[in-house]
Amino acid sequence: MKVTVSPCQRVHGHLVVPGDKSISHRGLLFGALAHGRTEVRGLSGGEDVHSTARCLRDLGIVITERAADCVWVDGQGLRGFKAPTAPLDCGNSGTTTRLFMGFLSGQSFDTVLTGDASLSQRPMNRVAQPLTAMGARFTLTEGKHAPVTIHGQGRLRAADINLEVASAQVKSAVLLAGLYAEGTTRLGGRIDSRDHTERLLPHFGAQLDRTATQISVKGGELHGASVVVPGDPSSAAFWLAAAAAAPKGHMEVTQVLLNPTRTGFFRVLERMGASLTEHIIEAELEPVGTVSLRAQGLAGTSITAAEVPALIDEIPLVAVLGALAEGETVVHGAEELRVKETDRIESVAKNLRLMGGTIETFADGFRIVGPQKLRGAALDSMGDHRVAMAFAVAALSAHGETTIEHAEAASVSYPAFWETLAGLGHG
Ligand code: S3P
Image (cartoon, rainbow, N blue to C red; front, side):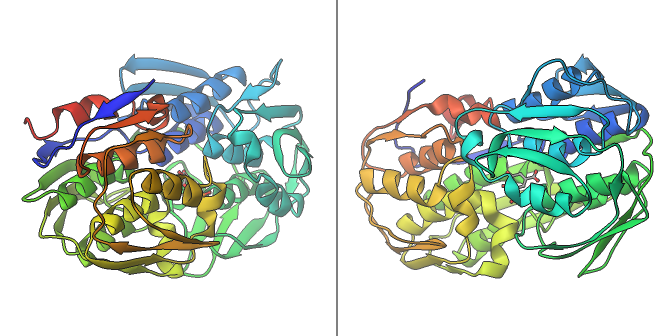
């Protein structure tokens, strides 16, 4: 699908965004691992979350749709899964693949995980490595990619694991494997990624403790729970960025997740000059509330390695805003972007250059000096949802029309994105 985006300088609105993708995956999966019924409300309708549901169904889990965004998951306990009769298709979803590697290594059967061409390029050895220390066994394609065969070991060993990359997917895989081990699994090192697994597992009855430097989890069963999924701040980010870039832009997003491990981009928007307020309305499982933004011009900023985990998925938007901002925007410590759905440093640079922009890329980031006059161009998402949506935002501030090929990729996390974009400024 190819979409055409026309420039639009009137960006304002009051929106709710779809349910958080990370919490939706976890709600479904932890429900499947638990004994009894779990209700997940506010579930993301994105394709990645459908991939998790489909794979769980292929493992014999009954998931009942109660309403458009509400499901019941009838879990059968940690070992209540049925051996699948065919490989499980994880689609485009790295989260599905990596979290499944965690709990499937504790089953008493083998499973094969496959996915699309992009998923099959992404590193899975980063999960296999720590899990192998717990007694798990895998066969990876070329030693690192999907298709991945998980040779279920029935039981795993508790271990002390030092995480080398700040990845919530790897961290979560280890914590899930820890449920299948006798004793306590301890995780240290780069545990500073999004913390939804740490927040949610105890809600399902897991014995999990954490300090700033260590997470520990004991082996043991889970019980069903009720999960209300707040709006996805990574989806809200597109509208906030669009408003920040528009003269007199303003935007309010309600019922959105305000977990500080996810809102790094809000801090960057503030530093770039936007006036932004967060109002937490509820803080039980996760902080949830309203974020409002008023545009006040944009200035460049520097993003350091320590900040990156809290805005990893929003860095394509930082590049777009960097091009429009006055002065220099520099990102370092974001080498993880190279192993996302596409190499996001390259995809962003390519599309920005097609719009007449200039960008210097590094192994771990980029430098942009603005303001640049972007012009409408023929772009391609390259199948990457966040690239498609970030360049729709760029197109709003360009001169002339932009087309984005493979725009359907947005459905991976935000199926209604193009519709919402079409309504922007008319509300
Ligand atoms: C996710 C973790 C992040 C993020 C992805 C979702 C998760 O990936 O980019 O969109 O739900 O755990 P990494 O764990 O690879 O950083």
